Amino acid sequence: MPRASTKSRASSERLQNDSVGRVGCRPAWMVLVMLVVVGVSGCTSWQEYIHNGFKVGPNYARPGAAVANHWIDDENKKLDTTGGVDPAWWQTFKDPVLDGLVHTAYRQNLTLRVAGLRILEARALRGIAAGELFPQSQQAFGSYDRIAISKNGPSAAVLNHYFDEWTHGAGFAWELDFWGRFRRGVEAADAHLDASIENYDDVLVLLLSEVAQSYADVRIAEQRLEYAKQNVKIQKGSLGLANERFDNGVVTRLDVTQGQSNLAQTQATIPPLEASRRQAVNQLCILMGTPPHDLDELLSKHSGIPDPPPTVAVGIPAELLRRRPDIRRAEREVATQSALIGVAVSDLYPHFSITGTVYFDASKFGDLFDTNSFAGNVGPSFSWNVLNYGRLVNRIRVEESRFLQSAVQYQETVLQANAEAEDAIIGFLKAEQQVESLKESVHAASESVDLVSTQYREGKVDFNRVFDVQQFLTQQQDQLAVAEGSVAKNLIQLYKALGGGWQIRLEGGSPMAEQPLEVIESPERAPDAEEELMAPPPLPPANGKS
Image 1 (tube, rainbow, N blue to C red):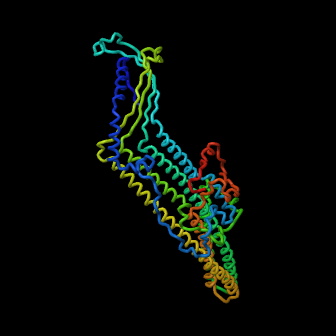
Image 2: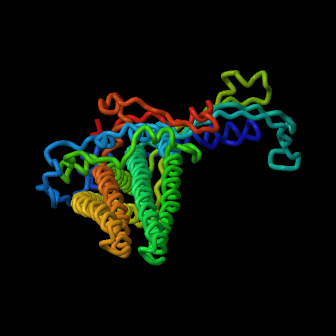
Image 3: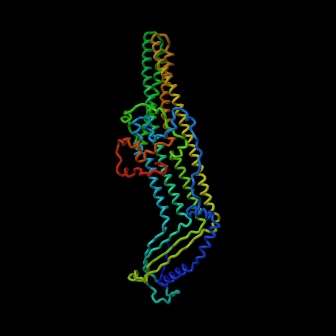
């Protein structure tokens, strides 16, 4: 708060007297006139002002959003719409390795840690906003000046042209929250804090789905590798039989070269699959917050592409509004913008403040704390932005436009969430149908390989038939592995679209509490003490989550 600058005791006394005079002469009727003018010219009526708790601007109401009444395929027996979505959905695959990877990623993922630190930032910003409700400026000051007054100036009659001046005191300024400006700011900060928590949950949902997707990629590559190696073994046997029949002069060299070509083609598929598996493992390591390293020992504890449960609990579409963190975050962003409209509206009105300064002023240090050295001033004041050339009104329009944008984005988020869930449902159901057909095809192709191999050995068919049947079996088995993986990945995508998984952070969640956490550390080093301090902060459950 600015204080009077004094260069002499005489000027200090004059300043004090003038100050007191100004406070005493400020007519009370001016304040009444201003309130009447505000009531007429402001954009918030007195009735609304009182109804809003003595705050200008609109009170927030959640915008409406269209959501489907039921799933398109809700009559399918694979879908359970009566029960709630399993919050620990990864456990439905009954794969202990996947369970360990999920919990390790939750404990160690760096992107999630950043999201947690953003919550600390939002909490601090909320504290700053709440602090504005109290005197905004409190300042202690002190100074010492050696003053020389001109002998030829207007103060030439002063006997002592050289003197000291010691000053110390304090000043304050408190702008009263008459129009709710600072309370609207707290509302905006509260909504922003809620949005940061919802963002943490959204990052967590994405993280868990990415871990499961990468794990499925590992198992899909392993299954494709297994099929490829089985076919390499079969084709080596056929090539050996062709060589034997060629050596005996039963067939031509063409059978041998066809067998060699078929075998080499199948062998060529193995290196890309091995690279794909390694890349999926590397991605798992990154998601777990560790440098890429070998996970073979851990992955060997289980095998096979994750199997889906007999039925999948999907609830009803309307539950997406409660479960999906990105929807809740979008809604909180609307609330933030609503409060900021009130902050902008408050600038149309006069700002009332109480300001004051108290200090001790003396030419000798020994007299500084004497009661006769006391000086000061205190009193109300106001400021009103006038002749602003439409800037304040246009700022309100800016905030209102941003509010409408946020509301439409919220509605768009709800629609996209509904579409993502429907896409995953149809992808999951159709992938299962594809798997059933491919299993029949693979079974028939495998039987055909056995039959044609016997017939070729007996000389009943040529090698072209062997070549075609073995090549078809290789293709069908590879497609079967991809389709089985598609079932698992579409189901994972469905769980993500339903918004499950963030509940892992809630204390007392029984499905998660029973699950032991297996922490997978980097092979190079374990986290040090500084890294432990950077762990995600404990998060309070937001409204409607417990």
